[in-house]
Length: 496
Image (cartoon, rainbow, N blue to C red):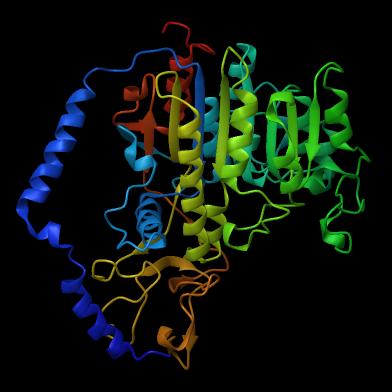
């Protein structure tokens, strides 16, 4: 392993050597500021068009520190220092902050937040598509407290609608678009308590196929929740845990097919090859389920069997944009959150960079004249990076100094809590003795937990396109879908 003292010396040298020559000239910074000022003045001419299309990108767990670190990583993947790089979302003209708390939680979860930014109503932690009158896990508090989402409003207005996620299609974020459940964990009836089943509540996978039967595009993971228990998975034939989970014996993929008009072209695909071989012009409905559970991390992805998020987005838009009335598309970079929960910052940040690629793909396929695009997060994480690192320091590298307390090096990236807490011989682990650049390295944390937690601070909202200027300050999270609906003249917002 490299000596931490050598790292310190190298870091000191880099502080001077990594300053680009042009940045030493004060006129460089003055000219850049003037360009930005000119662009800002042009924004005074507000885009008040009707949004034919609305695309919402949701980076699950993508707090501001994650956005900044992903920006640096994106630049470093292109052999640049990284700090000056621009993410696709950085180019959006309007930015706001979203207050993420749930009605019963200071630090929120992904279910209550999804209900806020999709249904326009704040809700309790762990519940989806229902108001705060519904208590988590209590089925008998659901009826009469259901709230509808912007996806439903778009369908009611004659638009096409799609859901694309890297998690299970019945996970917290996507489920709020179509389901009404007292518990986000009721993926199939196998995960539901007998009391809830007896009271008539339905699992989320069942609701996906029955509540809004004409969702045009559904892509992600979650294959096992659609098939009867112990039905062998099409891909992982030897893995019992990948098999079907349903106790009611239903084959929800067959049910999905049966609901589609015979004159329409409906396709179920389970791998990347099948997906990319489709001709979007001849596809009316698409169901793509690429993993039994969540999709693989981008760094681990099988390029033959699993499509990337940007590939799925590209196919989805080609199918949805055929509707002359436009479309609503929800895209979730859902495994940013999972990487952070596992303390695996490298996995989380590569997920964020891939979502940014998807944002770029969508931008190239649409126009801000008639497409409102919103990028935000449901919540943050207790993820941070610091330590006075020099310009161009690897985002996964060491800080340039040793701790002045235990005299050991530390990585720039750290967590407030999580599984990276390690004590060796009564002292903090010496990170110079481990491979801290490994894809699955768990960054050190202050408090030991099996799973790192969410953070409670506000998250950013980036917006471009018609009426994007309405996202302009510090807002309650449930405000977001009201803006999207107003821009598109759907739901209750028909005044535009």
